[in-house]
Length: 255
Image (cartoon, rainbow, N blue to C red):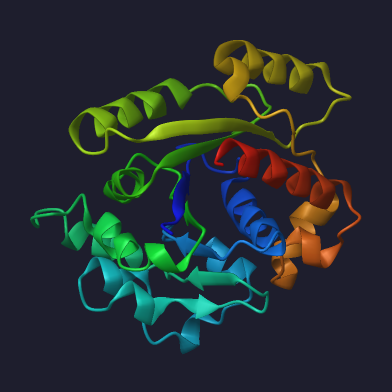
């Protein structure tokens, strides 16, 4: 067994990227898949969103990227069965600067992921909202790219640039990389703008657009402040049901 590795990325912030990564892992684990979430965004929101105390961490993804720790030493179990996390802290941003001139700077995450890939069914990588060295590392380490897109006015701006970067990575370093799909987030079917943007996503990405949309939902927004995924916070909420349905769709696509 070797894990399916999926990076969650969008160079625009605030599109529900981390929320999607945290909740996708939760439902994959619920569906009995052994799952690892790698927090590779220096903001460390996935780490805090799972109630991991950053002050007690002995090693983080910064140590992995600097070659000072093995990924297996950094992995921490969450309180959910089959759901582990490789946590991070803001120091990761400094590590990115430190490795800029190093050899193998683009493949450090891939090399780390390979050491644990046989222990998991899925490895989900939460990437920073930028086209940085960390993002390129994430794409090179992955089999798939998952692109959450907010159904708002500027949603598709910048997506073209991200897809160009993806093509470059495919050409030069990871020919097997595929766009797994585009997930419409913060969707509000009552507003014509939301519906219009979703239709545009479907028109542009065709079958790559996920059928499930993630609604604007208070519960989804509240859950991280309690340090839990929305499914553990309120499993009957619209947001939880949507993430559950989306996870099923993703499982089908990665069979």
